[in-house]
Amino acid sequence: MKKFEPIRFEGVGGRRPLIIAGPCSAETEEQTLSTAHRLSACGFRIFRAGLWKPRTKPGCFEGVGEQGIGWLARVKRETGMYVATEVATREHVAAALAGGIDLVWIGARTTANPFAIQEVADALEGHDIPVLIKNPVSPDLELWIGAVERICNAGIRRIGVIHRGFTSVDKSLYRNPPMWSIPIELHRRMPGLPIFGDPSHIGGRRDLVAALSQEAMDIGYDGLIIESHCSPDEAWSDKDQQVTPEVLRGICEGLQIRESNDLTEDLSRMRSEIDELDDRLMELLSQRMEVSRRIGDYKKRHDMAILQSDRYRELLARRMAQGETLGMDPKFVLAVLSAIHEESVRQQMDEPGCR
Image (cartoon, rainbow, N blue to C red; front, side):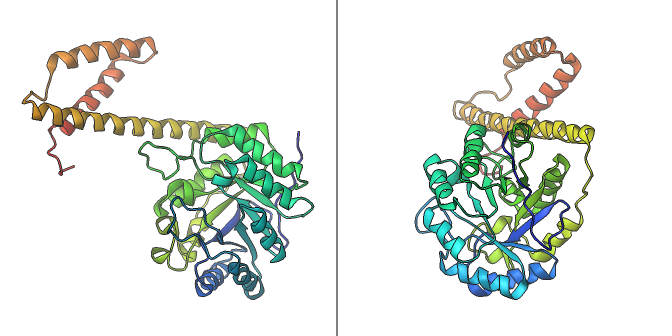
């Protein structure tokens, strides 16, 4: 069993959650300093800002690069905050270490590439700096664990992970569905490893940050890394998921931090499993309604009746028998199927462009 040390900073309270806050990207020196001063005034002690931004397509803002190191150094001087940024290459690590960065994190796309992780691990070897590792974009627990082991093998002991959700092709309430069972299993297999929640990237919307932060606390996460910008609507990247420092202070003040024991922690985990299953149910229902709309369009083009009674009776009988086999009350199955059928008919009758 690998031994991990707590991620602590002098002068920063040891009680959870440890909050890391700041903009998705350092855009200008003025924006970086303005956000940092407001976060400091709100009581936050660890400032984050991305300097190198891996983007899906060329031509997007890819970060200010190494010049931003000087801006973060100025944040340290003027506010006394600790500073953190993302690294993805040997050169990033060298610049961060030379510039006095206090904490680095490894992004989801880097975690997905063992060659890139090993390059970062080699560059970090011999240095005493906390390292946080985001989950890979795909729901691959072994890949995540492998990244932790590579950083640990480089001699780093202050290691934590960031749960930022996983990419999905399905429609979802979340930008990156949390799939809570994966970090829960990681915790079971590496119980001493600190876990940070990233509600900004999971939700992708600022109105989801508070609820996702609370859920992370209920499961027992050690900290949160949250994107905060002085003018979120004007952010150059990920503007929809960033909040102002003052809003973030309200979110953090509203968190209920329970001193969890095994009983309440197990209950929170089971509730998270229920939430994850409910998310999947909603996604499947959305996909079903999309097929219903396509069926409706087909029927209209071929002058067919929307309601096909024989088909519905056959479907109802088959699904009720299936539900009974699976241990569900036939009345419950009938009520669910009736509601789904009613909505499917409504979707089929909807005129294109009115949805």
